[in-house]
Image 1 (cartoon, rainbow, N blue to C red):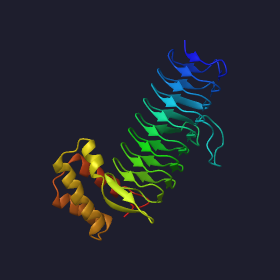
Image 2 (tube, rainbow, N blue to C red):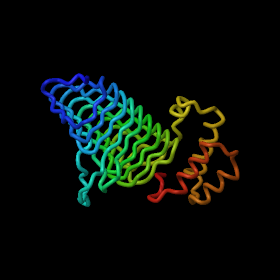
Image 3 (cartoon, one colour):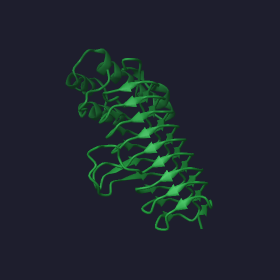
Image 4 (cartoon, one colour):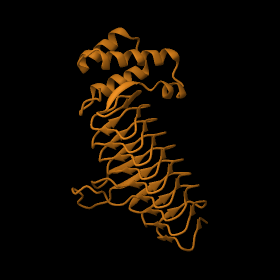
Length: 257
């Protein structure tokens, strides 16, 4: 049986794996699913149409799965889907999606620090780190391995690219390209995330190609179409460059330059 503290309020309809630990003063709603090895340390509220995978840890005062703040909400059963092996530190909020059948999603192996807000319809990938008080507005997409600095405010519908890093206290109103490092006020793309790329196993040749692509996109004063054409003509193709090109070409808000 799950280890449930006597002060916790757990709806009998909630589906909780046998080795889940629910600490003092936690509340779990009837439509919630908690995977094996998950821990709620204390004062955690998980409600709504919410599913949590294996081995997640929720620190005190997290609020997960409650109704969207979006005024367009008209009812139904939107929800939250969270993967496995995630850490949610104190006071993290993850809101449900807005429309019936839609989900706010968080991947696996993420580290979500204190006071982070993940708003309705966001999609957070795997191995993402969001530092203290990072704030995601609605419909934000964060790709795998991205790092968001503390106190960042990210505008709705913005995309944060794979293995990028965003400096603390940034106001992010345009997409941040994969593999890049963005910082400053106003925000600009400074260079590639070299350390992050190396830590994630990219070869020296792959890192060098991304460095050259950065110079083409961000230093040559080219349009997006001209820059992507130049990358295709000047650099040997690899999976990382192709991802970068597709990301830049599909940007609707424009990229942070």
